[in-house]
Structure formats: structure tokens, C-alpha cells
Length: 111
Image 1 (cartoon, rainbow, N blue to C red):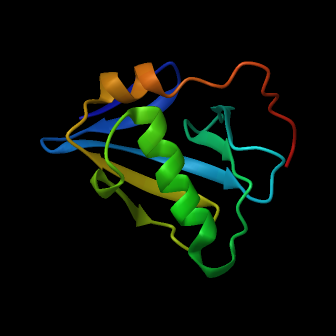
Image 2 (image 1 turned 180 degrees about the horizontal axis):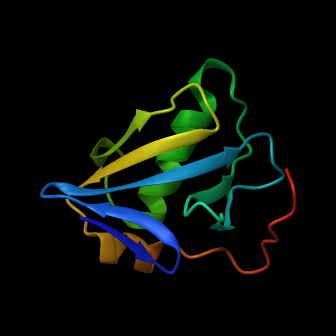
């Protein structure tokens, strides 16, 4: 079942939750900027997209924010693109919605 919570599109499944993110690399700091019009999370990362650095940084960032082990997070689509589908095992859509709020002071400017 797909739900739209505060505009964030999250799919609640038997084993966990899935959602989409758009990442911006080489940012000044790692931050969750907000929710895009399409329901994706916009996340800025200091990491470079070279040699899988941004994907690894994204998994670390999400693990910390969601309070889950990195091994429970998988990029299931878009590994080589800015837009990615993320699957998190052992978490509900409500948990994701509650834990992934934009960082205070982050501004959603065009990147």
C-alpha cells in the first residue's frame, strides 16, 4: 500500500518501507532539505558521486536519521543517478515519516 504522508511518498511493505530520494552531491554539509513536489526527499551530501562515495554517504546518513543499521538500507534503483529508490527493512512508513524531517535552517534552493 502506498501512502502520502506530509507529501512524502512512502510504500509500506511486509518487510519494511520504501521511498524515493533526490541527492545533490558536493554540498557544503549533509542535510535533509525537504520534500519535492513529486514526493521525493531532497538530500544534500558533501560526498562526491565518484567511486560510489555518494551512495555510501547516503546510506550512512539515512541509517543515522532513521536509527537503523546500515545493512537494513538498500538502494534498489538509481545507484548511478540522482534519483534513487530506497528500501529500509524493519521499519514502518509512519517511522520513516516521523524521523525524516527537514533540517532546521535548510533552504530548498535550486541545485
